[in-house]
Image (cartoon, rainbow, N blue to C red):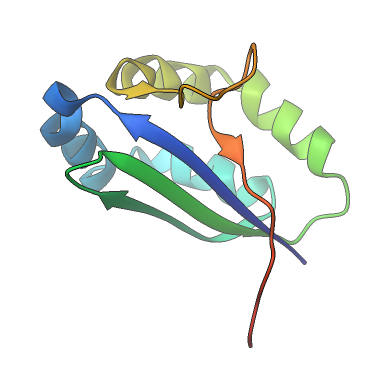
Length: 109
């Protein structure tokens, strides 16, 4: 199992919309997340900084292939098209980065 933590910011004027979207996440999206071997997926919001932190556990054997499968899914692309306008990458994001993966420096079971 691989633990993944990522960070992103939320546009201040889109917080309510983002919360509403995730309170009513589409079943097809939830199914795709599971089909791509992701478990224990959680998104945290820190206000007033509007910082989003996501955590999940990847239980598959080919992370890149599963992420490509998710990215190619038309329903996932539609979901992203409504969520992405709510978000913005950190100022330190590299070209093409959106959610920025974080280094796993400590874990206790």
